Length: 264
Image (cartoon, rainbow, N blue to C red; front, side, top):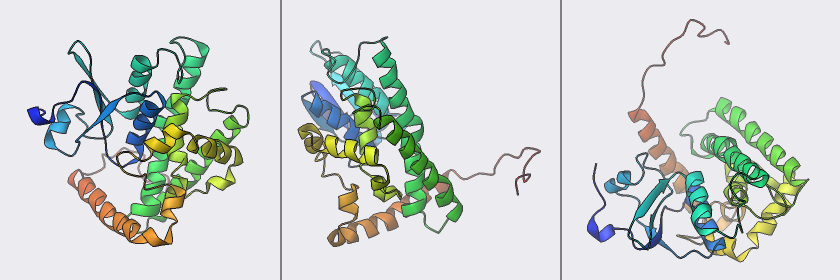
């Protein structure tokens, strides 16, 4: 495995690795909310696998004052690490072991286990599939809508996801709600989600974080802009081809079991 070249070595402090896709913006917004100084690291290189063996974004390297460093990958782990290291006043977190801590962790887990993945599948079949796959769109778009309904009910009982103040779980969920139209769901169907989203979108740290490393490209407003459709046409065309190419590399026969074809 290639190692990080000396000229690309992380600098002292917090180094966030990512690009202009959904998950890295979570980490950047939380760092902005906590006023953490951070640097940006290059990610599209062979040596990045030494930071995240899965090769996905985001990841971080925290170079501490004593010269030691900590490497963390996957967005939820990055969010929990930043809260642990940089939120000693519990601005965006609760003390470990408290009821609030477990509520926050439950909703963060809900995002990474369901809301985000189902959004990703709906987005793939609605926007990136290289051929129409009606069953895929039928399966995942309603599930993404159902999860919005779960979120809408939760936000009818409290102003934020996990209670009466902003938590890292809010940030993690926000970026997906911010991208709902691109995935095939109208956020206006869910008034509590819409109001919560709009409230967070007005926060200075969210506004600043959504500009790093580039202005976020998949908000409802951006994807609906008639003047920007050349970008989205190309994104869908070449993004779909890229996904297909990567997937084809790992094609193989489905392992059979005796009950195969019982459902059709």
